Length: 277
Ligand SMILES: [Zn+2]
Ligand SMILES: [Zn+2]
Image (tube, rainbow, N blue to C red):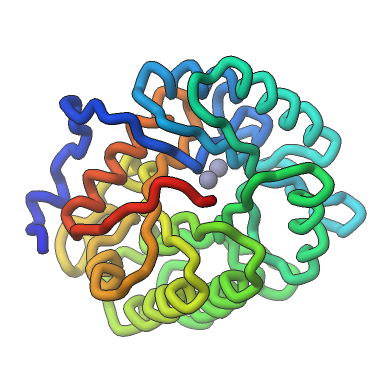
């Protein structure tokens, strides 16, 4: 559908001034991003937002034995997050929504529900970053060519999609950033995730941060590590829902990277959804 030159193009289209939404946004509370919701609203206004969803990495209750605070807020910081989103709502000329990006663990189904029911989250994002293997957690782009872990990741992601807890799947092809090559295994794993998303009617995300992270040298030529061209060609042959987001960890990326995601989508003729509601 597009050739290798298009894979290496800078996708930012400065002439594209229409206002667009973004539902994947972080804050400095996760300890690896910059800015608070008000900073994202300010930048989103300048960059042309139609609506903004905040979706910082969710905290996990310490009592459950998850010690994962290095890349996420603590439970004690939820109120700070909610108040900051509420403040940002007052400052925005567009709708702002409260969300969380969550890993999947069936033992935490109660907690994900609580994020919605008790803390009032408008939506939850499935962000599968880690493969849980016994007591170990392996960062998905680092599974390299370990087929056992690849299939474990696929099984966990398919189960997560089936749980009905989430409103869309962030970067379903994130592991390709480390895997690089397109082969039978990667195709079958991504097909399983795609089928699950189609079955459940859950949108799949073309991730703008992946585009910002750039090109890898793959067996099929230069490719974005993610969003991975061959996967999205497969998606284009189904009636899967597609959402385009920035996954901003810095206000300067908030809408700019979502635009890059839409530009990528345009190569495949996707009709991108504009809201998760
Ligand atoms: Zn992050
Ligand atoms: Zn994210």
